Length: 48
Image (cartoon, rainbow, N blue to C red; front, top):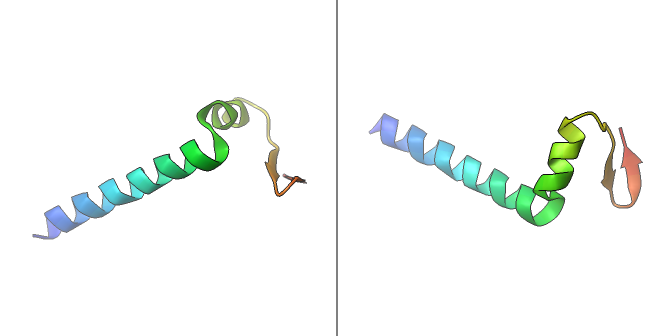
């Protein structure tokens, strides 16, 4: 029972994370940030 809850919780967190990246950041921007660009624009203000 605990294993089913743990797997379900992990799947839910991964789903929400993927949806957030897709809708708010974009996969291309996320890859460019991870590849070396260390600035993310939040609310039109640079955040480092």
